[in-house]
Amino acid sequence: MKDFDKFMSQLQETNQTLDFFCDFDKISQNVDDIKLSLCMLNSLIGATDMRKSVETIWNRDKTAFNVMDILIAVRSEGKKKVLDKLGRCVVLDSLFDSVDGVIEFLDTTGLTEVFQSKRINNLVDYVFGIETGLDTNARKNRSGHIMENMVAHIFDINGIKYSQEVYSSNWTSITTVLGDDEKRFDFVVETPSKIYLIEVNFYSSGGSKLNEVARSYSDIAPKINSVSGFEFVWITDGIGWKSARNKLQEAYGIIPSVFNLTDIQDFIKRVTDDK
Image (cartoon, rainbow, N blue to C red; front, top):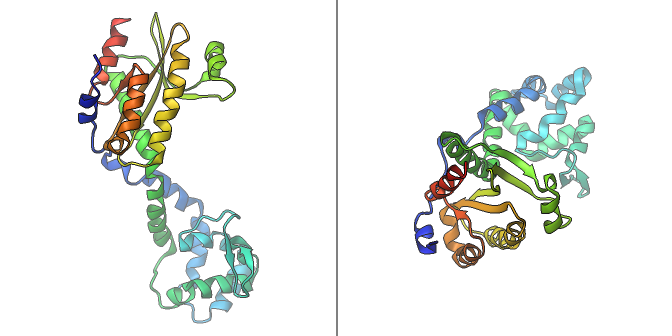
């Protein structure tokens, strides 16, 4: 018999392993992609005549300046807008289309003073640090991937065969009950008698998204379960649910198969027994 209070008491504080914090492979690749340009811009460090130094680079390869937005920890990609010195709203990247624009960027951001005073010794190392900082913005997505990896590992060690990132369009009967919106499931586990469509997530902190997720799964689970041979399974964890306890409890009563990382063995047993 399902015990919601027990389920809540089992929720884990974190799923973060040490590799959660920084993806250094991605960081290194981002730096390598612009390394040549950064090496050219290194000549600006210690320059007494900044305009002359900028013009020297410009005459050799003006595209080197296209990477300068990262020097202020911004990835504009032609989308970021700022006010120029005349108060006009312009696309940040447009400042890199002329020597005057580059000088305005350097002077206004304060990089001219930083370069001339040699507060930075090497732009490649400097940008590596910036990329490391920006990579923290990806942690929220990594938390979800870590949870998926943990579930996949549990399946692997228990000999459970599965598919990942499978779309509802693979089954006409599921498409019929879900309507026009195509749904992607994190895992699909097939047994001789049933196909389990599985969603996985982990929330270490609260927020409105938790209520939305619980409401969404409460809606689609009965639809999927109404199709013979299919069952919706939700594997979730994290103390973030304590802030959305009521909504989770409501979903827990609607969805027969809700598991966390502690009682996931109950699901494993069900699948194993059906082999």
